[in-house]
Length: 157
Image (cartoon, helix red, strand yellow):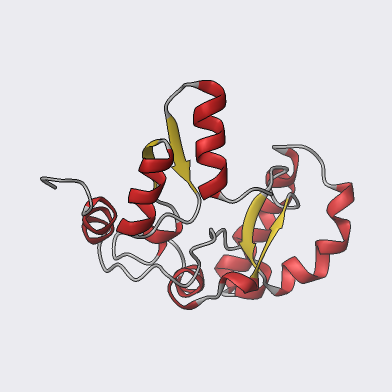
């Protein structure tokens, strides 16, 4: 898998189209570098999980704020699409089935009842917490703080 800082200029150069950078964006220096590399905009994901406005469960917020990127894994198991998730008991229990994963949206339908029941029972180890490479760097109290920080490099912002 190619990192965002290498992917953005390659896609911008190859397509000539606007590129939206998504995946681990959580700071002004990173956003500025991606803009110079050709990004026309940014998507904030994990950076917003720990905010007051987030509806993520407590354990998911913890992963975003205090987790470590090395505790994540990329997998297709839970959605049928490659995504980065925090390593939980469920992830470890089924990761050996990666090569048998159905395409999207099959896994989402399969796991939805388990996720609902696990959440209702408070069984965080049976949940999947989607986080980006910025796991552990979501230190924003409010969405406004995150947006202000990531855009602070723009003159006049």
